[in-house]
Length: 220
Image (cartoon, rainbow, N blue to C red; front, side, top):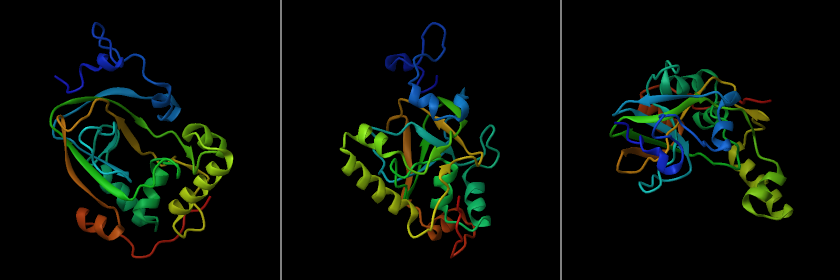
């Protein structure tokens, strides 16, 4: 039985039909052209993400990507990191673009990996492109800030994301990366493998690949 088969408790799955229902619109919108399918993710599957957050077994994020080849993603994380090297950019910058992570949403900075203890059900699809940073208006509304505070917040988050780069693309995404949304994850059904600062040096050692010591810039 899938670890989250009882998702009707959160209004995501109808018990009788087995179909997923009432999926929040913002979840659907995170998938390219709102196209996704429900898939089974086997027990022991390794999943990863780039994040600024520590692992919290009481509130595990539902958003992940496969470390190894899975369904349409024929290469997994390893090829993503190699693509960063081939294109002369840092892993952090490449993953921000590939995974369409706006600067004000997450600073990234850490590689986090978990392993499923049992089979899971999840939504599977590609990333919907996102702007390099949300508008001041959207930030003000979402974070309940006035315009001046939202403007300052946006500028600071962009500065962290760019880290000395002249620019990143105005629109992030479009590199064919795939993602999973697996609700109801907790430390009871998955375990942390590692959370570590995602410097290129550490990534290259952890995955046994060569990454450039210096990188060129991806610009819009």
